[in-house]
Image (tube, rainbow, N blue to C red; front, side, top):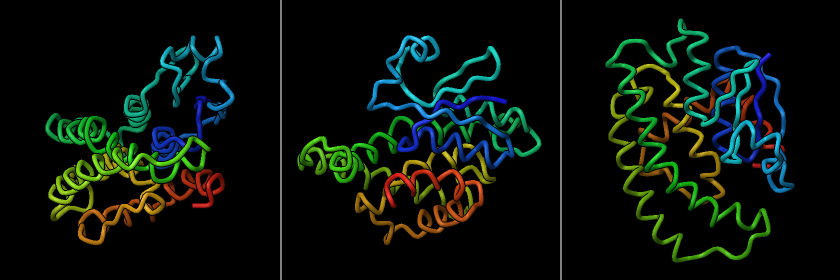
Length: 212
């Protein structure tokens, strides 16, 4: 059985758990105590010198970076189409994966850290200047996502690893006061994704950890 080195608060780990569950792939979940320094151990650094989760070990094969992990998992069940073989379809999935990585993900994660996680982890007061800057970015990027979802159930046409990557960005949206009231396409899409059994099961440890 493949092993997933995991931290339940991590959106990156969440998206891997969700994709594995969607595909019906069993993973042995190994919790990594980030605050306790498990990710700085010699053993962990030998797998991922970035000292970050998630990490997937499939026998002797070790891979990190959640989007790469999910592409690998999807390749195990190509018939499910989460990472399509068709070049145009795959390019569209990759487009949204890269966009989430570079634009939407960092902006929302910084906002969530300041508005929610900082206090949860006892890391001081929120920095309003960071909040103000990231709110502008979040508004800009959410408008792009709203446009991208027009007339679609899923961002690349069919359900894909891109939907799970994007959805994980929103895991603390309520606690971070990120409203989707003026974004009907985004709101309907995230509701569809979060209604999936795979997402509910993957999100359960987060709910237990933070009561969200």
